[in-house]
Length: 350
Image 1 (cartoon, rainbow, N blue to C red):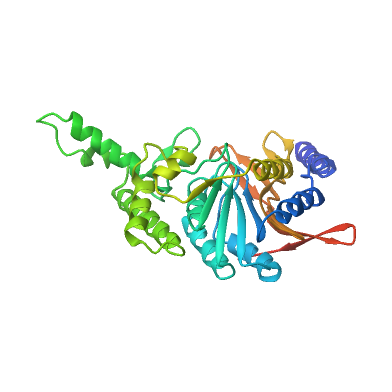
Image 2: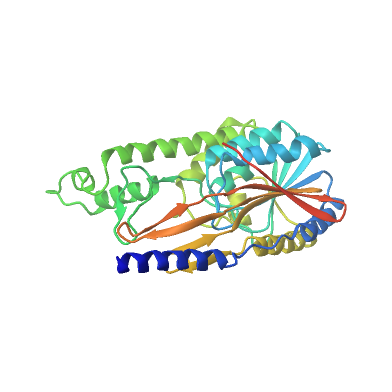
């Protein structure tokens, strides 16, 4: 009985100590970002909109709701200048965002000062013109997938993503190195990768080309050129993360221009402010529990800012060797100025 009492007392003490810990919060720099946006838009012929995603976030289909909340009320011009910074995410999300923007704007100019990779490259392809700075790069749009039957990474006990490019290269190497007595390689590959994963990866590759062609069709009427660009970006690079810089983008047939130095510098300044807002905001409770309060993406236009903030606890389940999310209050937040005060409100999408 004494042991039970001691355990209960210890649990109550741990809960009290956890409650007393002040959770880290990311800074809100809305006034500073708005000042930069006002400077940028003043020198542009059209509206200016930012879409910034941190390394811990990804382009998603639900983001289209946040875009709609902004531009449905603030759209003023026929031309949109869209600042994109992202490592990628959902190609379907890129198509939906371009479809929405094309319902409001006759012309779109993508502003790319930094990374604009994978699905973000698809998004940029929906613009009539892509303006690139010295640090800018696009990437291939071939898709890797994490299937329910994907192989398991034994170290982290998590499913491994598989890409069409990787599978093709394995088969190509076998074809080059095979001996007369060697049998078909699929029998051996099926021991590591389920046959349904092969089918799913091939389907995902076809989907990438289809999405890219449809995104290009919003401004490119030459179907042969659209097919050529889509196929090239999907299959002609040795790595999904191969950096397509300005010179290579021209070779690929994209309508790219060099960004003016002053605009590029202002966008880099804006990126620094967003990076500060999106800094890691983890609060450790103990060796197995921590709280995540990180901002992972921002969408902003003159007068208003929308961002997605993680707000959840994580518990490390040692028998499964992975973290489990708990008490998840993550949501989209909206910053507006009322007088001199910043007012933040939540909104949810399902």
